[in-house]
Length: 116
Length: 116
DNA sequence: CCCTTACTTCGATGTGGGTCGTATTATGGG
DNA sequence: CCCATAATACGACCCACATCGAAGTAAGGG
Image (cartoon, rainbow over all chains, first blue to last red; front, side, top):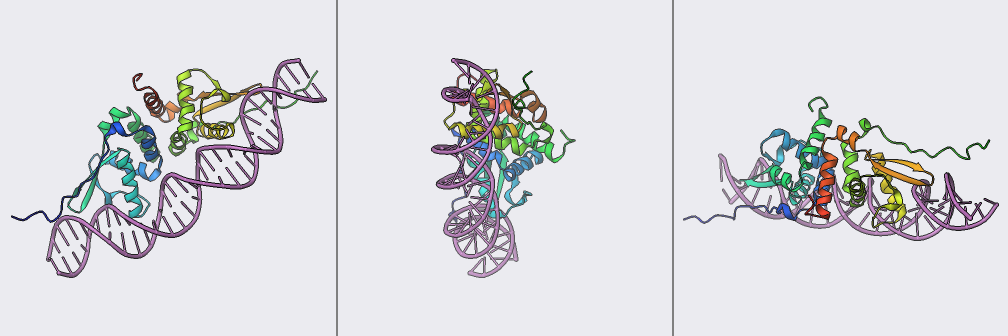
């Protein structure tokens, strides 16, 4: 019986009760991180880290994902060598009602003023 | 007939159409500025600059008022030597629906978790 | 096994912004 | 007129953070 070569890579996520507004605001104030959130919300499905359209290097992008994850905005999980990202929409809504939708809507409106 | 000694002091305010999300987010990400916004929203009436409870010097507070005003979050006007502040609630709601209420609610919830 | 793919880690860098103290200006009262 | 009050302007300081490139690690395919 083959023992697993390595432990499957896991990712830690904070409970939303232990995330405060300051953290979320700091996560959402960066334009690149808002792009990530906006693209996740727009796509409606999980996206791998490499598929985001952002004007920064991959190492910088890794940093942004960390910030978003630690602020409880996104959830991440590995599938093989690829890391996927989801918005923690429902949990965030419970913790900070209306906040994420308002920001996402404002992002969308800036990208395409007609759509809103 | 006494001519006015000086022109009455006026304050410039941006039109909300020329304020972008980045500016508003940057304005609201600072905890001191959120205290200002929160106290304004909680009080329900205009407040003079000196009546806010914030843990910074008056010169720093002046800076925060400037940032909030330039981001279109507050409106300021002089009455004699005193400067008053109002939230531009309605205009902001039109520009970024739901954003200010969500932030204000989150602030209030942090200060007093029971009230929400 | 090696190689590629996908992402991370680390260290260095630069800059923006929050902070303060001091000096200054504006208004109103005595 | 002079002074007190309210707030601003200015300059300096400091630190957090976004950014990058280069090197590292982990999974999977041939």
